[in-house]
Length: 74
Image (cartoon, rainbow, N blue to C red):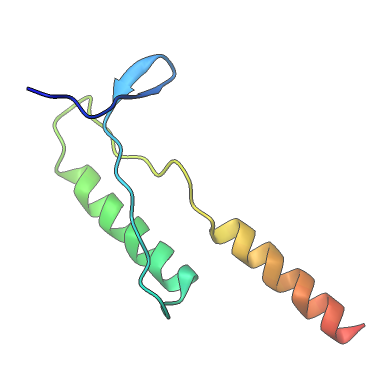
């Protein structure tokens, strides 16, 4: 079987997935929905297997919006 790539975290092999947002969607809404789906999926995993978001740009978006808001009001 041909292996296309490998991912590790903290020295252990992991399975990674990427979520793509459709053009015109709200990134905060999408991130929230993905987080909820990830939580639901995690509940069905076998013991010892976890599902964790590695990169969530919600914080970046919130900080950027705060900066824009501040700059517009000054």
